[in-house]
Amino acid sequence: MLTTLNGAAVFYGALVGIALGLAGMGSVFAVPLLVYGLGLGPHAAVCVSMVAVVVIALVVLTQKSRIKLIDFHVGSAIAAGGALGAPLGVWISKQLPPKLLLLSFAVFATAIGIRMLFTGKASEISSDARTVIPPQPRPQAFPRRLAVMALVGLIAGVLSGLFGVGSGSFIIPALLFFAGVDMHRAVATSLAVIAVISLVAATGHVIAGQRPSLVLSGLFAVGGVVGVEVGSRVGGRLDSSKLQRMFGVTVVAMAIVVGLRNFYAR
Image (tube, rainbow, N blue to C red):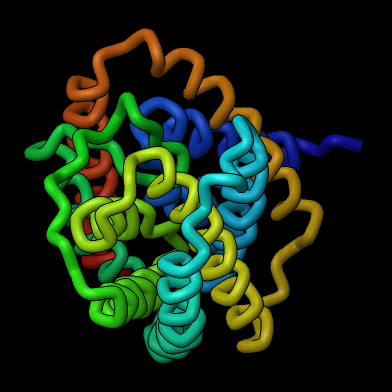
């Protein structure tokens, strides 16, 4: 039976997915929606967000034969770094009380929103060639390139474990700029890496004691998958730069609300 809470989980998951499909940025909305919309604790919300990101990344990855585009050498280096960074992010998250975790999240979200405002580029889990203008890559020696990618993965893993975000906005530009891969391979590789990092992060939170509802997590993820498809179809007809600026304003506004609520909370 679909209860009001379960229906809300699908709805909020769909909102996150639509944001991902429209502007390439959506996982940053997951934690606030889970906390203030579904009443989860911040740490549980991060865990549920990671579960949803895993499902969405895998579903999107299997579309349009993207699996064949994965750069396994570079992707493995990022995933290895992310697998090390995600538990560190989980550990840091566990050390922070809920109020401080949400305040830290607000600061992080503000930075993401400002970046979206000034760049007008999309580069998160559902990004494709029409939404990102690739920078000119810097040729790197192969060992150095793998080392840089491992560092990128480490940072992405920490952010994922700490804040429950996919970190595609960090991974894709790094793949374009440092690894020199084309846009389609960058998106496919980032999706695979995000799935691995998010799975490690979610597992870390479970090991750390989080026991989120599997039904709630699954419904939130299903809503996200449906939302990505809807957002992608609609987003293809809209100006991506304007969407980015609009979502940048939305993310900054959301971050301010979350920050103020927790700053003045007793």
